[in-house]
Image (cartoon, rainbow, N blue to C red):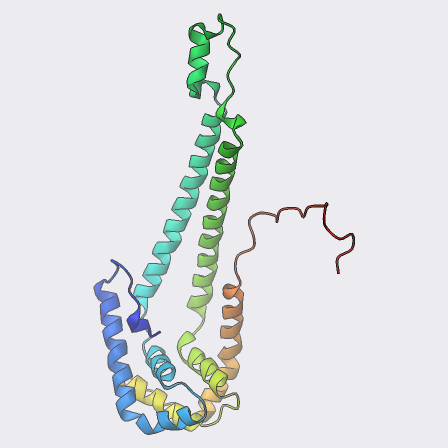
Length: 246
């Protein structure tokens, strides 16, 4: 899916709209001017649509709107994590409070004289404790995601993603990394369509991949790994289980 096809709900601010408009304009220019070079890349296995989008992304460096949305999400996660913890603490206090059940007041208002047993709290209900534990778990999940957002934003800001991402994806299509001359011309065309005079060469692209490709892939692997489980797995039943695992 092309980034121009994403829908960001009510966050279609002018910055995003302008970015999408420019991206589409660059894609159209690359398709028009670099048709022959795209044909060459397609013959060695590169997906034309993916390459056009990546070329346009490499030439479009202003992604302030994207940074804004990521920071908004990080702030929302932090806030919800704190509020969820506070709510869990309040809920824990309430379910342990005998005066928060009606039966306590029935007991106080004559029930004790009639032989009524002292009422139990809501904490005696396993469901109540389970819900509070779930709230704490969710607060932990939200907090961990907020932390990962911060680490990713730091790594993202230190990595020149555009050209490195283009080269990494091209190598997936074409492991031999042949026809870099055509790719360099396409990249030059994309930057020219973006209003930037920057000339690329095959040798320059090779050096860029060696210098930045590894860093980009390392960052992708690090942040593509799911968060660690928040709770231990349930113990396996002893009855019916083999004594020795196969």
